[in-house]
Length: 304
Ligand SMILES: [Zn+2]
Image 1 (cartoon, protein in one colour):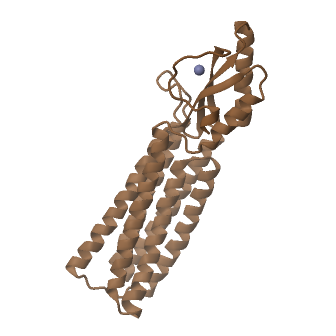
Image 2 (image 1 turned 135 degrees about the vertical axis):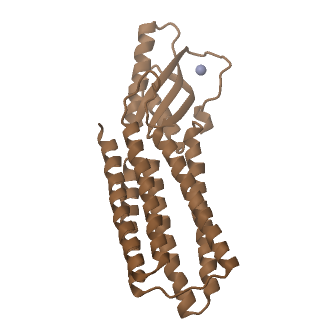
Image 3 (image 1 turned 60 degrees about the vertical axis):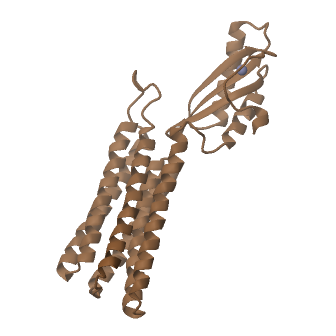
């Protein structure tokens, strides 16, 4: 198994263990102090264990080698898991909005929770802070959108917990409980937006788009370093997980032999792999110099 998958598995376990501890702590303290809000928060942390199981399960899929059924490998399982996490986050936002609105309609009466419950919320904020930072760091380093999305999921919990504390301040110090509900509604909208943005960003990869168009420049630069490789055009780049598949047309002197042309194509491939890290595959199509034909869409030098 590659180190990248090991990193995902390690991070997932940190998420599972961290959220389990927080969940047990909150449910226990909630039951002892008689605060149903803290118990509810503990049950919510338990649902975050599920998202970490998703990333752990996905890591096992990603690590499979390519086969007849999936010649491009299994890396895109990360993309699918990211979409799932985005939807889970979006529905968590909807759920918060619905429960807040029903509280407004029913006019629920707030009771001041014990200081113990407030302390536990503080510990939870710290715990989730460390969990989210670990997910962001490792997720960005190994380019796993799934881990970054789960980091955002944990960051949302921090915002919710801070919102609960701010709500207590509004309710009991300022005696303006309505501000508590407004805070909760704003947070629910913010969470839905986080989920929506993850969904939209992930679709770029599902639709074979490129998140970072600067990569085209690198490809043309790489080809320009290869002698006898002319007029690079019709470049098409897409992602499988953290890797790139790059297809490109080049033109060579038409009187060159197939062997010579193949050597040039191989040099182009090597040069691209040196310039662009994280390449899954490079496909070079060779045409005679000055070739004119109707071609499907691809990016040319003057398009960027
Ligand atoms: Zn062409």
